[in-house]
Image (cartoon, rainbow, N blue to C red; front, top):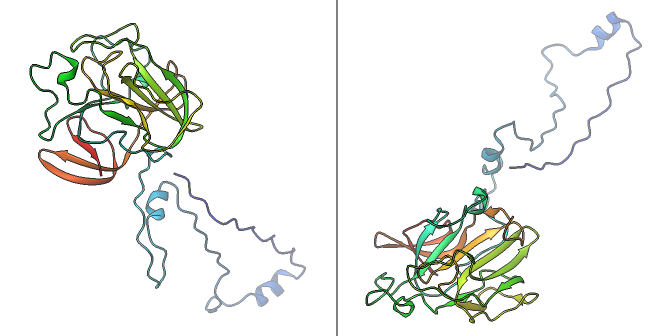
Amino acid sequence: GFLFTTHVTPEPPPAAATTSPSTAAAAAPPASSTAKPDVRQTDQAPSGNTEVLRNTAPASTAVQPAAVPVVADKQQTELYPPFTGTWLITSVGETRDGTAQRNIMQQQYSCEFSGTDASGTRYKNDGKSNEDYFGYGKDILAPANGTVVEVIDGIRENSPGIRNPYAQIGNAIVIQHSSKEFSVLAFLKQGSIRVKAGEKVTRGQLLAQCGISGNATEPVLHYHLQDSPYLQTAKRIKFYFERAMITNEGKKQLHSVYLPAAGEMISPE
């Protein structure tokens, strides 16, 4: 990280002495002098140790407030889980069979979420129809404020176990949060998208419904964050969610900042 400090302008060197060497020596203070040197303290940290100094309280007798936890690689935008209810994180940045991947950076840091019932089960009956899946048709929400920059709709939905390799992203929405952060929500249900390009959205606003379009083999939400609006060339960004309730091996824990992990259950606080 960077450490910014107050700039101290160095004083100009003293004028050249006009006295003789013997006179200068006589004028110099003795070695035992108690005069303190002119020392100017700055916040400059030694190279390689900036992180330690930044999280260390200054030398003071005053009580300092507790430091806010800092995640070094966290994105600028505060993102929240884009749904209600409980969802299973089925994959995180994994290469799926049958997926044409041209750039390794484009497959990183993407997540797929599958809706579940209260027990964590993804589907009922034999799971052979889209309606068997608890996530199918569930509301998908805006993860943060932003502007919709692209909407893809009209892609026919698949049946469980079947992909669409010709329209892999399926029905999708791209939202711009800042100049370098764009949310992509994909595999949406055909005809369910409620927003259009150019529209401003607020966090928690209804966007669409979970579907099974594109490269999905069951009803899931695909989500990732990227650095530009161009799906074909953008670099994906590691992202964290705010205020997420996580269930792992039957234990629930509220995370103020959460990095998704495959196999865990997630729900908004």
